[in-house]
Image (cartoon, rainbow, N blue to C red; front, side):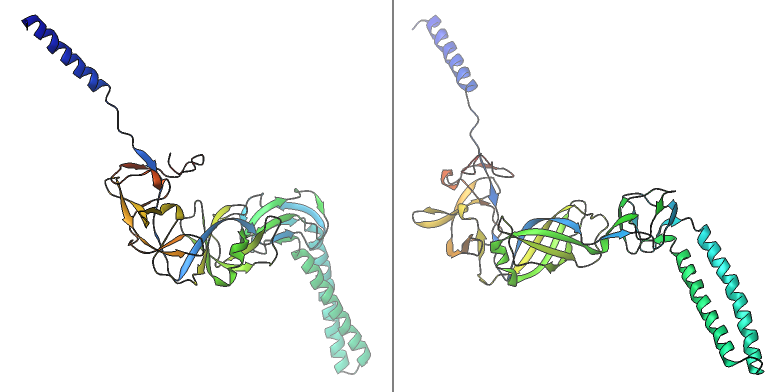
Length: 353
């Protein structure tokens, strides 16, 4: 072979080698959704969406009529029990009290003189009793007018939020007319709709709690009401009260996550897994366990029927610390490298993206 021919062959080999390297493809990595074994024991929990409601709305108004002099709050204000909310013009009520006080003082002096004359037998028993009765009657009128004077100030009967303010200063109001609507936060409740299957387990409820955005700690609740009547969607209306004074960050209308704890009458030992995690390999129930190197390994398990939620109960083969591939298990192979995603695609029936 000539030297020039050998040079061309070597050059072609180098070029072919370079082209082959440029076409090298990145290995396909399958995306999977994973879950963890749930230990079965004496209790189980379920989570539902709920909403905070004001259990009691208070309409507040003056006990007496008059012209509004001052309003000390605006809509949305948080008020404490006993806080002054508004005042009426009390000038006429003060004058009425002062006039009756003068009459009462005069009558009291007159009764004292009559008593002395009665002791001296200068007046009859009837005259003395009439004077005493007149003093008592005037005292009642004086107290009634003092009460009316006190009624010109409106105080918050409980802690809460001012939801509405219906009047402005200088307006006239009648006795009993609602000036404010107050949301009583000391009596807020959580409302949640539960399905019929949960309602049928109501005798097994052992505890309630909720979580809300912006509130760090879980908030304990207690059962307030569960009427035995479903709505048109076959949901039952569960009402839960706060076990203690609720956090001020909780307001009426806020969404919360409600956790219901109930006793597990099955008392099975083992772990629960979604049914989609289990597959048969040579007739043996198995699951895919995700390793620290992001590869999957097949793990044979022993099943024990299902639990109350329809999950597969694994009696042997797991210790509870595993990460299990949840869906698309039939497409995997031993040792295959996968990528974990946060949630399954809604459009992907198999659970693999």
